[in-house]
Length: 592
Ligand SMILES: Nc1ncnc2c1ncn2[C@@H]1O[C@H](COP(=O)(O)OP(=O)(O)OP(=O)(O)O)[C@@H](O)[C@H]1O
Image 1: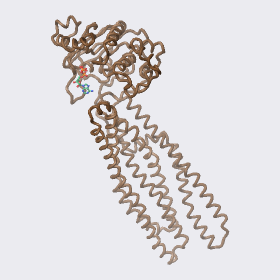
Image 2 (image 1 turned 180 degrees about the vertical axis):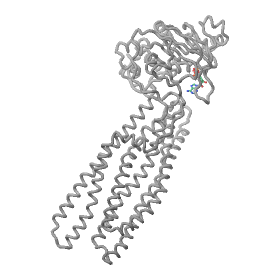
Image 3 (image 1 turned 30 degrees about the vertical axis):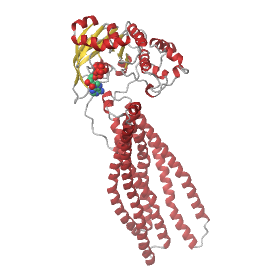
């Protein structure tokens, strides 16, 4: 049972970045460990090379045979060549798995978002979190975390070996490096801030682009391409600006390390030279030590790169976590649709109060009405009266502030949401049709429907002639949001889709002017026919629909003014009489 009615519970504090990263990395920890180990092996093998080099110089000096040393060097080079790429591949694979996990989690969450959260979100921005931010997660979980671990270990091992060669030269080297490290610590938080700004702008760009592409015809008709283009460009430029600034700080950090090592090389050379002259160390030791100084370059660069990537990744993690914390409906298995011939539903609203947000005015001020099983009930009233909101509350897209909504005598707040929605067929006012084929659209809510059932609803919705005419029939692609269909066809597809679910309660938000007279009259008869076996609720905009209704609920400014038949209401309710005389009659005059 899902009894959660609170839509605005205060969210707990966001978890720390490293905790979130650990959560993503946990399922892949074996692969990560293997990749890290292989990377370390490559580093360790590389580290032995200077020692072997020293041995070579010693052997040369002492005139000893070189075969053994050369063979060892060859072996080490071959091992490095084999293990290096393998380690990198393992890490890349792990990174991709982490991206996959994050994307799956996020998509599953976003598809279950509560409708109020969706009202406040920008789809384009949410999309960028799934597509672009998750890519950054790959870098931070593999390159960065592994880079920090392997880089630190390699630096530590190199420093140990340097210490074994000559502790004095090690202290000299570390002194230079500590200075560089202090500078880098100042730079890194700036990289984090800039990266956050850059990703935020990518999200804003996605939102602006979605807004423009989603209504491109309107934008063209309004001659607004330039303004929309400028808005998208602005976000792209902001992202560029922030990324360039982050890049500047990263470049400074990267080159600080390189510069520090060059300085260290010269300091070690001069200090080491005097130590060779004083006989404290031999030439072989100095050469080996200088080789180690250069060996420090890659792991130190890896460390700095990793720290930078961690900052970039932390910005992405914050955006992914933010999306994951938007309120969502509980995950529940899909409910089975009502059996054919299932009893129609009874509905009751009891003193329902509702507003869309704490800062918004109330929409329903204590709505009460009863709808018995079977028959057609029409909701009429001026625009903004709260008619569509009645349907949204029945579907539990929103929860009432107080009062209750009952189906078959049970409060729907105690129903599992999938079970509730399985009982309902809903045709929205703008009759959305999804990209894909006609068949995909019909089967959206009833994937198990048989060919016969599809044919039946096609006939009922008067789509059979259209499907017969199309060369690809039901497999015809309808385009993005059904743009290849006419408005009336889209509406009939939406009706057929709802009917295929064999709903016990059919909610029909009538479009004001989508259907032609012939189809409208036919569909009206069909709906009246359906109402004999199912409970049908219609938000009605046409008198022709209203006169067929068994009862009419007249709504105005969030209250139910009157309930009755057309004949009763025309005499009893002045608002209804006025609506019937103006809007409805005007509409019916067109279709008569
Ligand atoms: N998602 C939403 N967020 C905030 N306010 C909303 C939302 N949806 C609707 N409203 C507001 O709630 C009020 C009632 O809207 P509703 O869609 O229920 O009216 P309606 O009677 O169906 O109107 P129409 O006949 O024009 O379709 C309106 O003032 C509308 O602006």
